[in-house]
Structure formats: structure tokens, C-alpha cells
Length: 115
Length: 115
DNA sequence: CTTCCGGTTGAATGATTGTTCAACTATACA
DNA sequence: TGTATAGTTGAACAATCATTCAACCGGAAG
Image 1 (tube, chains in turn brown, blue, yellow, orange):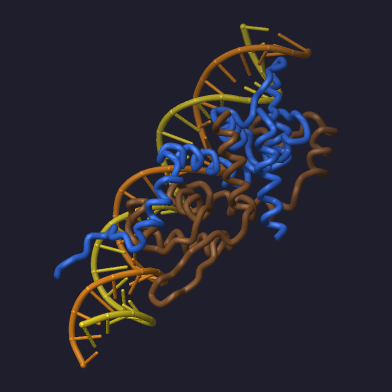
Image 2 (image 1 turned 180 degrees about the horizontal axis):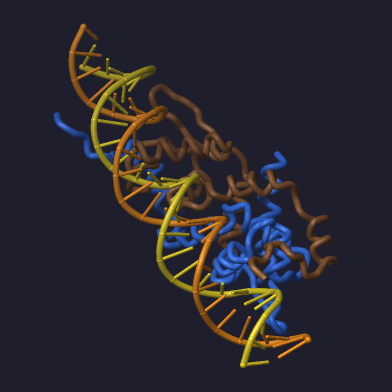
């Protein structure tokens, strides 16, 4: 024989049951997109800082020790994903968390790490 | 003047308070490493399938519609992060979730997406 | 022993992504 | 009007990463 076709099923019932509980492919994609935003220490630090108080871009850059540009880029991603919101006051832009799911997700992961 | 040094602080008190509540840099790194594993639809589908029952590599590959190799690579990442565990039975390797933090984290994210 | 099959592995490749840099906008202030 | 500052933007670069491919390991069955 030459070459095996890949997806041979071994345990029909198990795969059938798995198919029934599977979510839509786009749901896994959406979830992945969301988690990817949490998958960077800079963004996590930003989100964690905003858990406690409103902060502006320059202060956030100073806190993390990165450039304003880097912070702005990341805040834009977080804004587009509706994880943070902002409020303009003169030339200052105040950032804060959009909702408290963020806090819950981060806390849950911290629990896992603490082991 | 030539060029501004970046991290000038605007609101001292706010940054000071943020520094006090900040976690150790390595903690943000560890968190990011964990979340990165959730930031891929293939791995999410694997984890979600294993939430409900034990499954073997070939069945998982069939379920996801990817090669055994791809599944094996991803399961290895998940194994190293202690998100899944395995059990060998003859030539079959049965995979399952290592603990239920995984389920909680995914469910929390699903809630956020549901909006 | 030989073949089949579940599973692993490492190198290679293409895609995604975080940061920097430089230029730019807009508000504040003198 | 002119300058300093908060913030944004896009291109470019380096690094990371997911999948494929091919070769391989080890148990099972003939």
C-alpha cells in the first residue's frame, strides 16, 4: 500500500458524541482571537493596571517601561476587542476596563498558575 | 531641544498606586504563556472536546480534520503546560483534561463573547 | 520476521505579531 | 502664532508559531 488517508476514525461513538458537543468553528476562532489578546505580558500588565483605576497613556507607558507608541498600539487592540474603553479630557486620554469579565478571566488563570 | 526621553510620569500618585498593585514581571509572563495556549482554535477545540470525554489522537485528528502530526504537536504543548494528561493503553494514547480550571477559563471567555 | 497502525519528532516553510522608528494630529499654553 | 506635549498611525523588522512533510518508534496481528 502507498499512502494512508488521514482521518480514519477508531472509536465511532466517541467521535460522534464529540461532534455533538462541538461548538461552531467560528466560535473557536472568536475565542482564540480573544485569548490571543491575553497572551502577551504587555497587554496583561495593561489590563491588570486598569483593573484598579483609570490611567492615561503616558503613565501606562512609564509604568510598563515601554514607549507611548507601543502602549498606544496595544491599547488599540484592546479597544477594538472592547476589553478597554476610553474617555478624552483635554489632551489626556483616560483608559479603563470595559467590563469585569476581564478581571474574572485573569483571576481564574492566576489560580491555575498558583497551582 | 532634541529628543524627549520617554517615560515621563504625569500623575505621580496614580502611577505609584499602580506600581503597588502590579504583579511580578515573571507572573505576567507566565500568565501570557498560559493564555497563548488558549489563543489557537485548534488547541481550543482539542481542550473543549476533552472537557466531555477521554479521546485518542487519531479520533481527535478526525474530529478536527487535521493530521495526526498536527494534533500530536499541539497535545504536546498542552501536556507540557499540564493542561492535559494522558494514559497509554496498548498502542492507543488516551488524552483528558488535567484539571477543571481549563473548563472554567473557557466558559468565562464564552460568556464574554456571548455579550 | 514482517506488516500495519497509532503516535512522535525535527526540520522547513509561511503566516502572524510585537516593537521600534518617524512622521503626524490635536490640544494646551505662552 | 509658535512651541511643547499626549496620543495615533503605518511601514519595517525580528521573533514567534502552526502546519506540513518525511522519517521514525513500538506495540499488535498475521
